[in-house]
Each structure stands twice: as structure tokens, then as C-alpha cells.
Image (cartoon, rainbow, N blue to C red; front, top):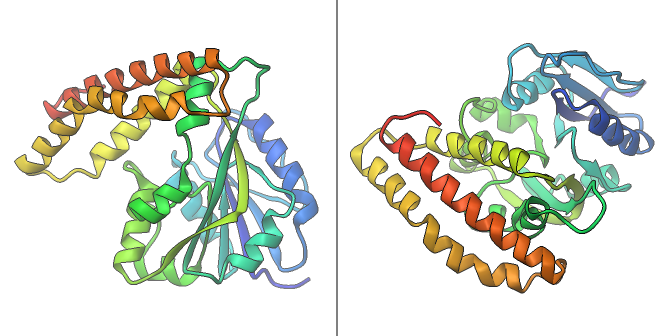
Length: 283
């Protein structure tokens, strides 16, 4: 059997149904020289992982630890990262092999799809408009989410792995770019991600994002001041983003109003969280 040149690394935690869907989509795309490793974060019940996929258990919680464990488990030089709740396009691996040499880090496109029947809920409509803008992340903010990310071993050798407890994708990509590695966007590298269907799921996501962003904050008073000003600007951001919702062709008029309601709720909630963190309170 050909030694692996590429390892597909799939972190997973307590989401067996979506993992099975991801693996089913990946299975026909595997070939000699490519291995696929599911790194389970010690789920309540270990997932069923069919051959040729390999299951590894990482007891430390967090996708950062899972991705680092996947890298440590393979001798491959290239790493294709995808999350277990993502659905890769039928040609995801083939496209990945073509574009993985375009830069040291290659991020692809993530589209949102619904798992429920229409009409969309407020959170689903909100995510249809705002979630997973990888083009902007990469070209404007200098990082890619690792749910659809290609890279190689030399980057890990130079800067180390993902750091848990903060915005790990942003931190890792920023460290890589600071070390001179390149990052590009490849829109032809496509995966889908399910929209969050209700407020508790959306709230959980943004609470995590807020905590991770706060983890990147410096300890000086100027850092806290900038953070506080960002928090107080949240209501203004509602007005700035309302036109984007109202122009969203993918939404019906009813869904646009639902998305606007969720936008207001999400920004006001984030403002409260950010102000609590600024004064040393928990959220």
C-alpha cells in the first residue's frame, strides 16, 4: 500500500449522525496515498467509523487538541482539515489535490444549508446571510477556518499546533503568516455546513466565539478599552448590517424579518457578554 502523502483529519465530538454523513461523502473520494483519520474528543459513545477511516481517541477536549492529535498520528506531509459536521462536495479531495500547492495554507468556500423544512427560522435565516464568509476571513482578516483548510507539515514544524482556549483558527493562521507562510482562498474547494436551527444553538456558537476572541486580548488597559468600545458598538452594527439582510435574495420576506430579529438579539447579547468580560465577570 502506498504510504500516505495526504491525511484528511476530522475532529469529532458527540455528533455521530453528521459524522456518518461526512464520511459517506468522503469514502468514494479516497485513494492510495490518502488516509482519513477521525479524532474523537472522547464522546459519550465512540462513533462507528468504517474502513478505511481510522479512529483515534483524544481525551483532551477541544478541536485544537483533536487536530493536533491527527497531525501527530500520521506520517503524511499534507493535511486536509474538515469538520465532522461539514459535507464535502463530491470532488473535494480531487480539488484539494489540485489547489493544495497554491500556498502554504489554502482555505476553501463554506456554504450554509438547512436541515429543516422551510420556512427558515430566525437563526437559520441569520446564518444564511452571515455565517462562514471564508473569502472575507482570508482576504480581509488574514485567517481561514479549519473546517475547510489545507496545509502541510512544515508549517506545524515551524510554528507548532493549534492553541486551545482561544480563537484557535485565527491564532494559528496569524502565527503562520507572521512566520512567512502564505494563505490564499480557493473558492472551488467547497464544503457545506448546516445552519443552526434555533436560538440555543446559535447562542452557544457565539458565546464560544466571544470567549475565544477575549482569549486573544492583551492584558493592558488599552486592550480592555478597545474591547469595551467594540462592545458598545454592537447596537450600531445592527444598523450597518440591516441592508445586507434586506437585500438577501436567498431569503423570503418573512425570513428577512426573522433574520433581522435574530440579528438584534445576537448583537445585544454579545454586547452584554463582552461588557461582563471587560469587568472580569463570567458569561
